[in-house]
Length: 410
Image 1: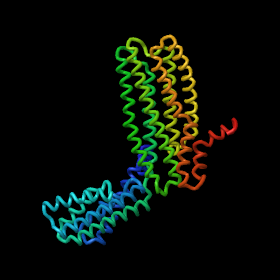
Image 2: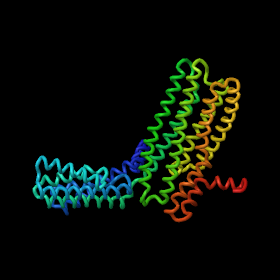
Image 3: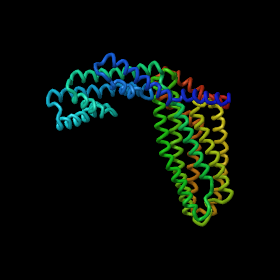
Image 4: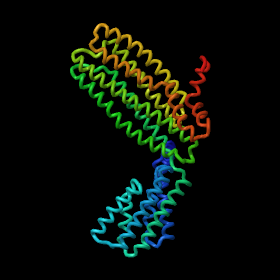
């Protein structure tokens, strides 16, 4: 019984620390506070515009909250001004309502309030539909300002959650799906249905495009949560590490899709024969297996600020890449021998070997460090000289440079 209570308490505590739970509490607090303030300052009996604005303003991240607040206030003010103009000129009729909506939507796009374009028309309609236009209009502006200000204060006093953890989990999940695909490619299709099996692997590779789009959305949210966040000291470094890592996985996914197409073409070219001899198929299976493990280790490396096991992930990645390259060299020798005996499929076999080389090269630790160095140099103008590079060097490529210095001239 005590263990059950302890487990339940642990789960509750973990839930309270989750970004979704934190966001729900922050949004609720902002809405209630803005409603209480609006009751005292606005003449409206039920100033619901203030909590509505607070809910929309208190976004997932502080960066998006600031930008959303500006667009939200602009949309309401523009709608109110349009409604005042229409009330003075024509009043409320069916045709003036149509013109009002059309004008509000057009002006909303012109002032670039983005997702709040409908809010311009909504504000204009609500203000035009009441008798005392001026009083209601400025009350609505006041409530909107109250909601926006309260939302900003809540974000400043209650630090918004950092979404690096969910983004890291999404990247890890993507790497695991890519690893499973590599393991599937190592399974030699047999029988008359081998072309259909190879085509199924190709469709599986194509589905990775949708997976990457979802991970990219999670990463963009994480990047926004690191901007202007007082809880994060080196947000730019984290953003670059995750973004460049996802770029590498995206390149690997594209190459895997091409490799699946190559294997499908090989299956079509050899309908009555195995794709490879037994020995060659075994070596290819080993290459793909270790490449799949390397992909997972790479994901662990780029999410190391979440999982805090960068050294272990780097060592595992380096070891798996070394084993995969050794098997790759053996595979090249076997494919060369097979090509001399039967040169019919030498182009497809050579293409498969080149695609394997590209994936292994993209996952290389040294190339990863060089790519991150380039990105840091690109952003160095906005940072204090040397600060970010020293921190990144200690975390990500300092060990590799020390090894090179020990082995020979840098």
